[in-house]
Amino acid sequence: MSKVFITGASGFIAQHIVKLFIDNGYSVIGTVRSIEKGEALKTNLNVGDRFQYEIVAEISSPDAFDEALAKHSGVKYLLHTASPFFYDSTDPEHDLVIPAINGTKNVLNAIKKFRPEIEKVIITSSDAAIYSSVDEQNPALSFDETSWNNITYEEAIKDPIAAYYGAKSFAEKLAWKFLEDEKPSFKIISVNPVYVFGPQAFESEVKEKLNTSNELIHSLIKLGPNDTFDVDKGGFIDVRDVAKAHLAAVENDNLIGKRLYMTNGHFSTQMMVDILNKNFDNLRGKIPVGKPGTGSEDIKTLAKVSNRTTKKLLGWEFITLDKIVVDTVTQIQKVRSKL
Ligand code: NDP
Image (cartoon, rainbow, N blue to C red; front, side, top):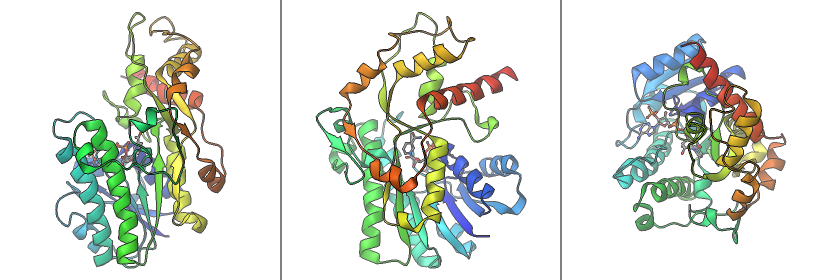
């Protein structure tokens, strides 16, 4: 049974990854910020010692991962998902940029010091490392797996959105540079998802406020019929496909050194509202309709993107926006109906 070490195991995406690896016969050691979060995940997984957790309360503290990694010999794969993902910050450099950079630095240094047996490191990066938030909204530009967000540190610390985009690009660049400079024995694969939506791995995770990306869908079903909503838009991908990409990165050697750009196209909030009104009798008349059918116009202002290489390498069809929205809201309603 191969051992996998995952940082930020209690996160939205990470819980799906942990569950998928357990289902595929791995044993998993995850870092979490508190005993409560570790115990909750242990209870939900219910697989005894095949899931163990270690507390890493702050990934940017000096040598944050040393103790946890020193304790667990025989780890073959490490998945680094922990990174702050929120925009509600008055000090974006401190809250977003520094933890992303130091967290990545700390985990790579800890592997070098304590776990030379690790063969692959999977970095959960982002489309934010592919383009800046400004370039993403420029229809004259095109991006693919080879593109980089070249935002500077000074530009990044100006506001929370720039900071998140900067943080993810600095952290991913740091990982590839570590490989070049330090020549460690492990290989790197990065997974670069766009907005990740989809149901929570466990119903107990359907809380009053969901994780940052799913809160976008959640906020739409909290609206009244006469409310207006912002036309948000961007790339979409299902969390189950993102988890599968992490498993593929571990299992398929032809993915070594690749950046897996995880997107299944563009969405706008209008498209989501249309899907909700079409599929949920109990929401129709209770949420807004907006301007039905105009979503395809909304997304024309976004940059062109191609992830042909990633799709070819992975070889499966990604989950559609309709299914993502329906599955996400079905789970929320199921949990709420039990309250
Ligand atoms: P979550 O916020 O649900 O998960 C993030 C995890 O990292 C949580 O376990 C969180 O712990 C932990 N974490 C964050 N900051 C720190 C810190 N300073 N010290 C210790 N632990 C920390 O987000 P997602 O699951 O959505 O995101 C996971 C990864 O995927 C991130 O790297 C994110 O950048 C990336 N990503 C996400 C996308 C999305 O749309 N969801 C899109 C593209 C990339 P806690 O919750 O206890 O604070």
